[in-house]
Image 1 (cartoon, rainbow, N blue to C red):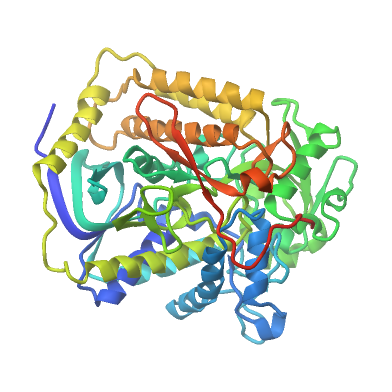
Image 2 (image 1 turned 180 degrees about the vertical axis):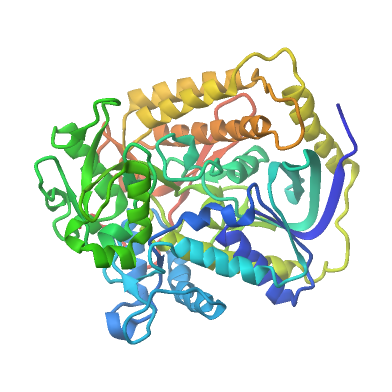
Length: 590
């Protein structure tokens, strides 16, 4: 059912409208004085991008004279928190630029919480030696997004395509050509062609059911890059946030512990003293998540009668109503609305929940997309934010580094794309027959083989339910070979079923049935590389904990996992070394 495809031509395509995407658009426009024609493609209305959900704050050394903090200390905390899998040149670049971005956003108008003398306030966060997390109450992501979005709208050269789901990345001979997408509102299939691209489409934690992330966080950009021949890196490292509201999974921000909240078991004990006596509740997230599940497994957690799942309590009562209302208002509102609990007078039930994708699209230190282990770059394609694996976070991300990462690499990739485009502004990108063939093939895949196929019988929602159950059961905080093998076998069967799925809604306009079927395909690819990487990494490091290999193994595993797509076969696996500049691996103690 081939139709006439609308082809839209731009200088730069940015896939994703969260903080990384908008910061890239802003920087590219600033650098070219508005001369570069930009399309920002967003699966949702841009201000519904998942960046708005970030609560606790953004990390950066902005008051060293007051706090005693330093760039070296921020770098060391990040590298130690990563369980020494972070590339240290990337970390050093990050800590240098992060304070500049916080002040840049201050100048744009972010309403930061402030100290009595007017300085931007900073709070403690897990794994950080000093209070270096700047915040705007517990709605930091929302205020950063709304400020940046308002400022991006000032540029007439930026077109934002709200509610357009990208379906494929168009590559030709190792060069980026564009993307295909469906306009959800009008039901139209489109091709966006450009001289350059930036993938800033966010993470993939929606491959789990019990998760903090939005329904839109299905790893689309990562999966599209992977299918197009671009390697993905370190996908086995999925962060579980220690405090997901039970039984919903919704985030209870680390800000709650940063302001002094306690984690207590059913015996009323602050159990973190056994696991991280120096940091207590403000140990890194992987440490706290394992500690909570250990308490549950050893019989000191609470057990839900309906699900049989365990949880512990997050206690804020001692903080008092005034402080909670001033610094944690959204946490109080969330607990009251979704759990019927007022944190002023009752503890909050929490359990580790899938939260963040440490892995992603393989990129160099400056966000340029790589085609092989370490030598071949895609000359006109970059990636930023959670979809990217710059190897900043390694095996475990420290809370509040992620918001800073989106702005730092949004700026860096936007500027790099602008520099690349200087000689191309004013010229149209070409659409040769090979590119047009790929566009037509993608349209046929979606409409002929998926939407209008009357012979398929598999229900995508049954497949998604089994995927979620599999990931939540076997690829959670603790893993082992037996469980991972079961997960991998199940995912392979689900992918076979997916090839025969039916889409009952045959309409074009706002077909959420079709959208969710496409997202399911992306999630199955993401789940496969998470499990395949986890099976092959026979050690425990950061968020990847194997009970059958409980020790970190620097001799054999101080390296990044790369996975390459192969049609109908398991991924090809390769490895690349961790770049160490100044900090040698040592035992993590908190």
